[in-house]
Length: 331
Length: 289
Image (cartoon, rainbow over all chains, first blue to last red; front, side, top):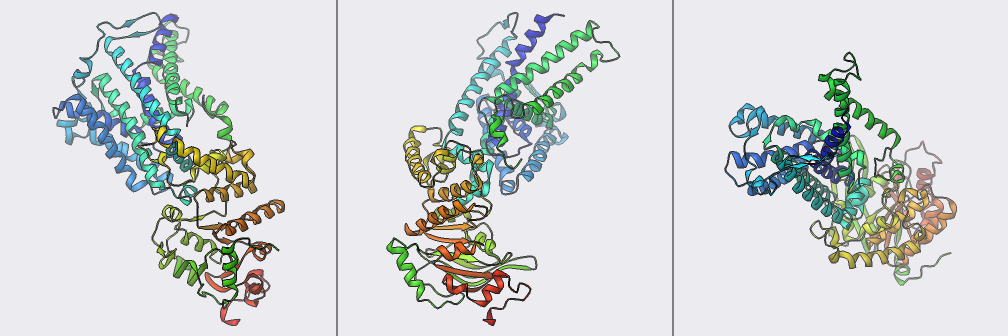
């Protein structure tokens, strides 16, 4: 087996484009679920809004890329308002149902034949809408080392993407450690108690939904830019559940945990895939057990199993505080 | 017995002594005035209060058998539930359509029968949270510590003083979930005081509290009144009601059936029947008295 290749692929994935996208999605979810207790199961919808707004405005409406990126933030704010106004006064489980449905509505609209001309139907949009961004790329050659390997474009996305993640994390750290963040955490614990001491719970929940949604939509914009294409089925519920996995893996309600969770998740996914692929190719694993075509499915099973074991033996995630989790008297 | 050591409280008591003890009687200086409150759940009328006033600077107890509508009335007055009809004012301001957080900001703060400590916040954060008009609670100012840092320091100092008084200062960095049931009651009361309320509404403050702590809770409630606050509380513990209240309002089947000074009210046959359950199978008619 070519272990160096396995390590190279896994490490490149651990700090790669997907890690950045899912880190941003999970940071947004952390705001919703980890800090405010909002069960948002429609994070994929926010990513889709971010990705599609960026792509569609450039390709179909001749916006500059930078204006389109600004509009994508605005669009995700509107999407959050649309979701929040009817549901945030209701119990948490209603929000879960509405968000999962809303994300699917966004995806189905995007892939519907009616809007084929602008949204591209089930094929999505492919084009050079990221040109203005890649024109700024100073790297003419990619990175080629024994342990890391990126194409020139990926290297540019990775570097700017991590800068974006760092800025978002810095902002998150400031606000969750402020009196504003304290109100959110209190809402997570008991809304009624927070109302009884004079806080407008609805307003704070809305702010949290918007902010986490905008952060998720930034992930969507990175998704679209990095591939120079958007495809509706990339924004189905699996994306939301991967983002939750990443969040819980790292440990909810910790500022840095979504990043670590995302790194581990993508490292494992690629590591397991590469090991299996080589093991199958070199017949360490017999064909009747796993064949080459099944590898990419089996890796999800194995990673899923690993995550289940993690939840059993370390339910607070990697960085979570076990004491804090155990204190949840309602559990 | 304990003598009120503030002139406010003494005056309130004196004013109440001379009142005619009948349901809905006008108080000389009411802070809460309620009229015609009705709340029914389907066919069941939970609250049907024609008139109720709460005297400023007094400790008023709200008693009655289970299901009498005390907690529902509490929920209505504090904005946590909506009445079908009726209106009530706090300090002369109409608040019957006001959402709960605005009522709390106006200075009428409640606690809950089942304590609502914010478990995964520290005791200190529970306290800080309750301070009003915090600049750092605005999403736009929250990243800018230099804007709210000084206010946070003042709030922390005030919280420390209250925690000292409620003997929770040693626990300030513990999670609220690590407190005992009685300590959580104390924390909830201390947290309510962070709002700087004029009226404190306590829903069964003694439920599940051990006898030793009961005495200190009683002392705390008295001191609220002595500092000029008005206390309205729901309670089942008759000793406590007799001990600390200046005025007692008795509810049964959603209505106020008696009002008066604690010792007098408890001699009232209707109250004895209704509350102590001597003839709990008899229907209670206020007119029988």
